[in-house]
Image (cartoon, rainbow, N blue to C red; front, side, top):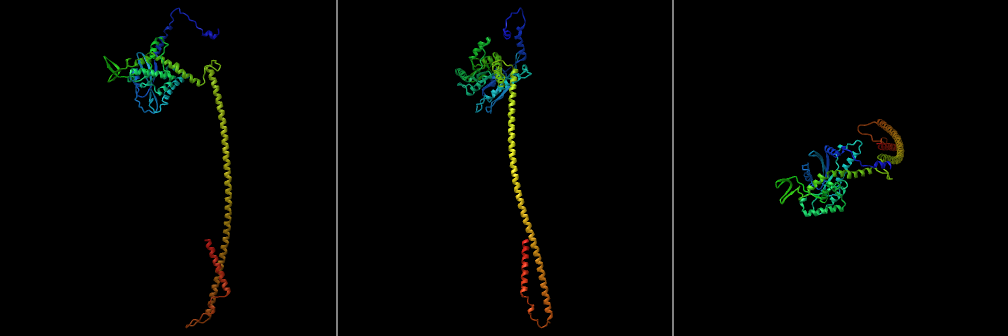
Length: 472
């Protein structure tokens, strides 16, 4: 035999006397009692269908209930945790209620918040398991152990929302369907309604929780209870006097519906199966079936496997090293791709900058040429202006010279005229009785030389006035 086969073989032996490990069950019981238990229930149903009332009736207490409206924009989950104690057994109970479920006009995604909540609790537990320093012994397990799905007592069939929601949840949580407010439907209709519901669940492939049959002590009662699914329940916290005792019931004008009367509803069956008989199995099924499925899928997504392609067992260290090398290779590949992309973008940017530089240089050269042309034009205009100014100054000087000469000539002429007139008048004696007549010498000179001189003087004066006006 090989070493592996030898190690796997076991042999039964008899004891010669009492050893003491027969007290292990008692040890487990005492340890469990000291640690306490936890149980988490998820209630799914429409607003006002009686979820909170049924929880109060199941655990015989009054939980903190908040009234919900029918106008919630989306489905919300409200979780409340309570510490309960019965005898010396402590129970940490968490009740998760779906607020606004089925109240929206568009019910297509009404189940998604519920799925996300369940996955979130699985993920929290998985992260605690994967820690290097774990503390699972005092970790508050928030995974949902049981889901009570409340069905409206329509008497016809399941709604499409109910089928879709249960189909999305059957691989994540233990679903126990219950018909709420069963006192609103007759017994014959209720029986047909149960058959119709189970038929639709089977035809649509919805797997609800089946009470276990592997334990001989509870196999018989569980077999019977599996035939009563879904349970038709009535909840009430009010006590009504029936006969000589007070019982929980609902008072109607036509009579009293007793909650704990098995002829009136299945409340007692639900309480026995959920709490008294199968609570531990619900916890175990959650851990070994639903959580293990989630854990396996998550680890496979992360790349962890139990065997290699050749079906040989692979250790966690080998898987980690393989994933590490794969991650480093992928990281190097991405780094190279990023480097290539960076180089390509740098080249593109450089090309864009060079093109922009060329455009700016062209614009600069163009502006430089325009500036040179404008400068040349301005210099030409300045030169012409200087020439005009010089010409004007010369003409003005000439005009001033001519004007001065004209004034000098006119002054001499007037002086000569005055002198000649004085000489003539002084050489003729005057009489008191008469004035001598004007002689030819008193008339203005009308010789050709005098007329030409007068014409030249007038032209010079006209030219001077025209130049003066142009300057002004």
